[in-house]
Image (tube, rainbow, N blue to C red; front, side):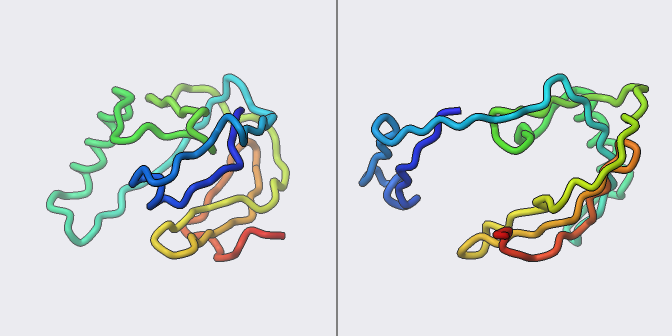
Length: 142
């Protein structure tokens, strides 16, 4: 991956007052990545106060979109280069691996300045990673 160490404040970049010099400040990063992986994600609908339809209507809408592979914003795994394509689940069994994976990022809240992070202790049980509904606040700096 090509990245840059030259970062401009968002307001300067958006207004055009400052351009990022990617050529002069380019750094290359190596990555170890998985190939041809398949994840099975389980989710449920939680209605908000402004919802106007019953839960089943939103669940059915979600299932139709998954079947078509359509979404408002294409999901990705970690960085946008790792696009997460999706569709209906297949019958493959989970991998038979169990191990502690350590601390993982749960969520990033960009509404605060600086952004705040939550984390969770990850464990793989027979190929299944359970992600809690809420993470534990922290800086992420060891």
